Image (cartoon, rainbow, N blue to C red; front, top):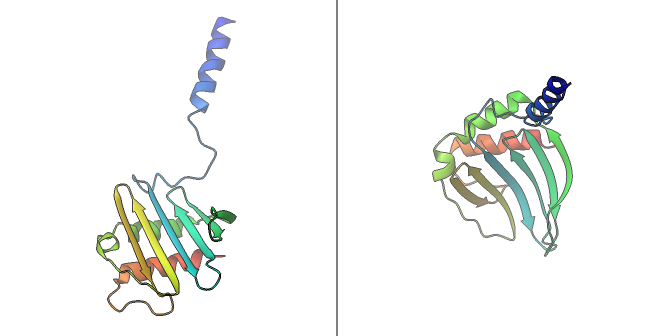
Length: 146
C-alpha cells in the first residue's frame, strides 16, 4: 500500500511538469514576442496581433484609455514558426531604427530574450531603407492573420 501511494504521488509530481499547450521551445532556446499593430486616426483605436514563442497568434483590439481586448487566437503552423524564428534571429531586426510620426501609424515591437526594438512606419509606404528581413517578417505575420 505504501508503494502504491508513493507511486501515485511520484506520478502526480512528474505529470505536473508536463504542459498541455503547444510549444515550440524545441525550435528555439529563447523567449520572443512580436507585436504588429496599427492605430491612430480619428478614433485612436489600435488593432494588432501578438506572436509568442509558444506558437500562438493572439489578435486584439484596444480603444483609447483602455486595455487590450483579445478577439481571437490561433496556433501557428510549425513551418510558419520556423520561418519567424529564422527571421527574428537576424541581427538587422534589432539594429534597424525608424520612427514614423503620422496620423495612422503601424508599429512592430520585437522582444527576444534581452533584445528589444520598436519600429514605427507607414504600412502603405514602407521605408526604402528597411531591411529585407524586417519586410519578410511583416509579410510572414500578415500571412498568418485570419
